[in-house]
Image (cartoon, rainbow, N blue to C red; front, side, top):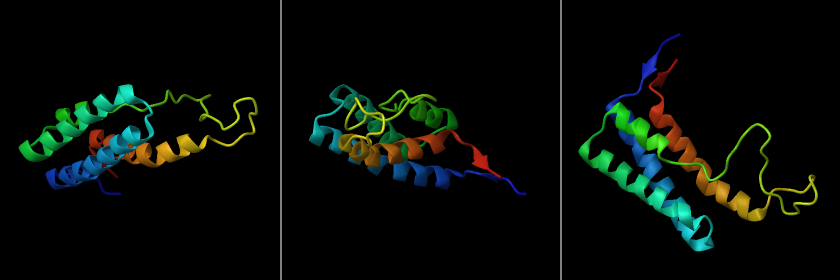
Length: 120
């Protein structure tokens, strides 16, 4: 088994995936008028990601960027997504939630990899 540590180029590519994902999420949140109070946090993360890409970065800065990008939901072991019919536990997830997840998950995944040093 061999170890692979992310290089500066890998990190730049990771930032290049995060930036458009953040842009798409911000645009979606603005369009659907959801979680408006969180938009500035994502805009700040976008500005920081662009700065790091353009000016260079340390691993600690990447870690801080990752920690600065919140999830919109408090996901815990008993959490389940908002449902179409909240009175029926067999109801399917709400359409607005499923639409939002298409934008939120790429951001979470792209941000999450920034704090990982490498892999085996």
